[in-house]
Image (cartoon, rainbow over all chains, first blue to last red; front, top):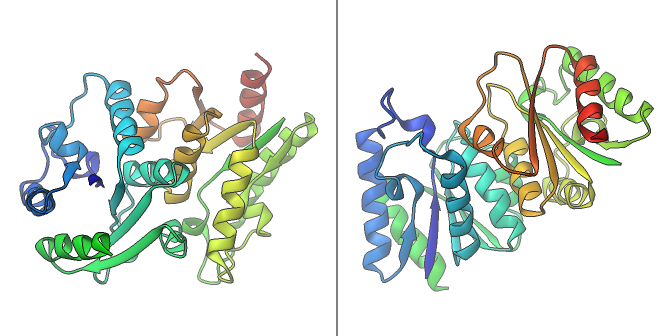
Length: 144
Length: 144
């Protein structure tokens, strides 16, 4: 299946636009676990080679939007700190009637909209402690 | 015309869920100015009588979504502090090909997605210093 992995990006980069290393490692292992299970994964930071490029934001955003429209499952990583990109993408995914997984680290407070969405039929919510465990949780959900 | 006025809500209430008074006054005067010009305005905090109700978030969110689908113009107020609801709604509005206005107070830093969206054909961006001036700016845009 085609996953769109929606994650905070521009808020997680340094002054040169390069993604935080520990966070990159977590995302990379999550993506790898999903790919090893036979799925394809689009994740904007990986697609942009782990740094925010200032070249053409309109083109970059349109590219992300097309990937959301084309995906089978939209997985949003949601943290206490709100991500504009994740919430915007979630709106697109809901409008496109996608199957949606909202994943939050255990103990983090999730915003009102993401909480409300967990009551929608096509939305599953889950909590995770570690990123490698998260891949297994997502794969279990998807195989149902 | 039918406006959907998309504004931060759950982040702007006190511990009892009641909206900040000064912010409510600003929104109310903006809504009134648009209505006096002959338009109808849906704004979730006003619709919810200026307080967050915990009764049925799924129903509340679905109600907001229907209003976005039905609107002619989606106006988002965007601040330095990111609003999950505004960004989610903006995703829905973009997916539904709405005419969109993104308004930010002068000098506030706007998130990456909102900046990128300002390059879309159906999106206009504007800055404002005062809420009563904002109504006039929106009305000028709309009359073009």
